[in-house]
Amino acid sequence: MHDNDAKREIMLSVYASNRDKVEYYRTMVVKVTVTLASVCLLFVGWMVSDKSSNLNGVDRAVIWVGIFIIMFIGLGFISHFEQSFKSASKVVKKIDDAMKLFEEGYYFPGTVYPKEWNEYGSENWKEPAFQYACLAMILIPIFSFVAAWII
Image 1 (cartoon, rainbow, N blue to C red):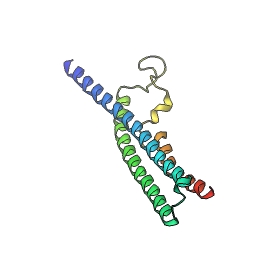
Image 2: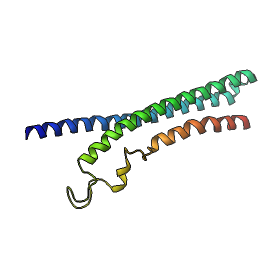
Image 3: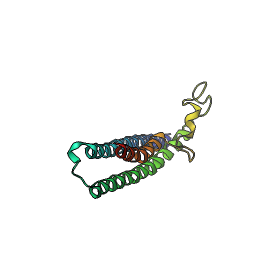
Image 4: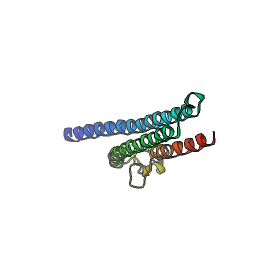
């Protein structure tokens, strides 16, 4: 009996640790996206302001190349966070399945979690935070470039 209690405690500890990691990676991808998007928009705002009117075409091109490099670095960070997120979420999914949280009637009528959550942590699961972050990293520089070109 004590062996099962010890196993359960270990599993719950691993579960809590990986749930914390999942939230950490979600938070970090949002922070990275907001920070890099803000830097991009800050440079674009500065370039279209009167204070940068003395910049020549080469200077502006160098700034744009820098902005696009920063955004690609951001995509690299997002990709790293996504891979780490997937690893932690797979562990969470395995423990959810072991605890039968999606099994109908195991604990009470119905399931503990909604059935649509059962995809979480699987190969088919696409975390929206990472999809939106990648989209933002691609679209913000492009729209900023177009907006700066028009202004």
